[in-house]
Amino acid sequence: MHLTDEERRIIDGAFGEPQRIALSILAKLGDAYGADRMVEIASAHIVGSSYQIAGEAGIEIYGQLVEQGATVKVRTTCDPGSIDFARWRKFKTPANYAERQIKIAELLGRMGVIPTWTCTPYTTFNVPRFGEDLGWSESSAVVFANSVIGARTNRMAAYVDVCAALVGRVPRFGLHLPECRRGEVLFELAADLSDSFEDHFFPVLGYLVGQRTGDRIPVVTGIQHATFDQLKAFGAAAAASGSVALYHMVGVTPEARTLEEAFGARPPAERIVVGRREIVLTMEQMSTGERGDVDVVGVGCPHASIDQMRRYATLLRGKQVHTGTELWICANTVVEDMARKMGYVETIEQAGAKLMVGTCHNDCPLGAWGFRRLVTDSGKFAYYTPTTVGAECVFTSTEACIEAALTGRVEKQ
Ligand code: F3S
Image (cartoon, rainbow, N blue to C red; front, side):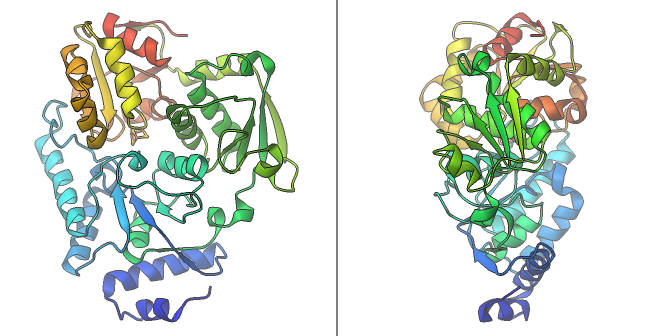
């Protein structure tokens, strides 16, 4: 691939060892994927911030980078960590585990990473613009940035994202190229679904789309309107059950004002009709658990927005979470602060629910809890919970999740 004079000097070590290593890795990646050149990025978002992902190797790598004076070249935010930094004792996190996460936080801070600890950096200090190139990892954030905002990023791997942050560049291939952003598979909602598309169908449809699409680009027609949170939930589910990094929703997302625009000049490679029956079948698949007692309810995946915090507070006002059942709401510190100012946190905590800030059920060690059944409204939690939490999962609507927390029981939908 073509490298500029400055990039050649970086690879020759003129700007230090961290930059040399970072750009060399990115150049090899670019060669492997047929990139023509590097492209400058507006921001990076890294996933190796979590001790669960980075492990001891991460501490060693970040330690060496800090010793060599590495600092990030562009605005860089970080994904959830493996602890709630303010409340890890409440979540029964072992002290030695928490110490390792705190060490990673210290090292990333010295490199200039903004400690957002969230999978929704676009609700904090990392809000991309349409058409901007980015170097992001975190599947739910990548799919949101590409699809809802129209920014451009591939789904970067852990540590490759750090390389991008250190040099402020990524190789130009895949979703950085307009011709690689066109739709490939068409999902048409049947009238029985399109006419009354309920809020909790968004993650279910995302889950189904991910399963059927794999790593191709899906285009959905038949959704008349979608909120920020519904698009967030749809994309996160599609990115979990499949490898979707970009979707188009005709009439909703910015690169799909029309069906023709979504597909460019090409016809869809496949056309799939989705009706109410397919949604019901997928919902059954998302629930590995049965009706019965509930140990823990998990909402806020991806991290809750301020609108979701208001919704939880409204549903919980004046009520009490059932004894023996936990209700955990995952969010980032920026949303937490605002929700506190708005009085939502007080209402939520008075009801006996816990805020889980800067982390989530999938990132924390939860072995000490011995959970057997988790209830969630998130397609991503539904996909990962059986392995990460080691519990059965029941997927249902947000309202039914809160009801399950209040009664301690769930009915499988
Ligand atoms: Fe975020 Fe954890 Fe869900 S990282 S997307 S809350 S699994």
